[in-house]
Image 1: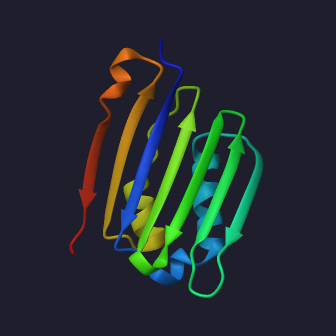
Image 2: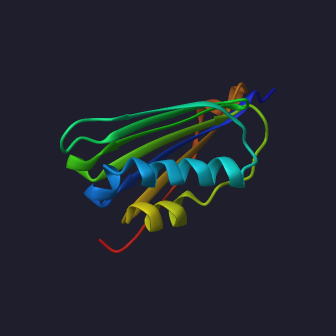
Length: 128
């Protein structure tokens, strides 16, 4: 019994300015939601002061999408959980373009099954 799929994404080597730019992150959320045919119920954003990052959370009819950025570490993390089957989203290409990430790691976990304890993951790196 599979009750959902969860993706854990980490983008590193990102442009610090883009990690502070709420509009860039909203654009990523908009793309994920539109391209996967998801429905957002409510989205909340928080921009930390000064050189801080951005946190975003979208409550979806299918579950949730979240992000946290760390400009001081040039890192962004995303979490997408869907309780219905969805295609893979091209996190690597999209985050390399939007955040200028040099490396993107994606872990996919099938939730609700005895085999879900072993996540399937891959790392796609760029030139560092």
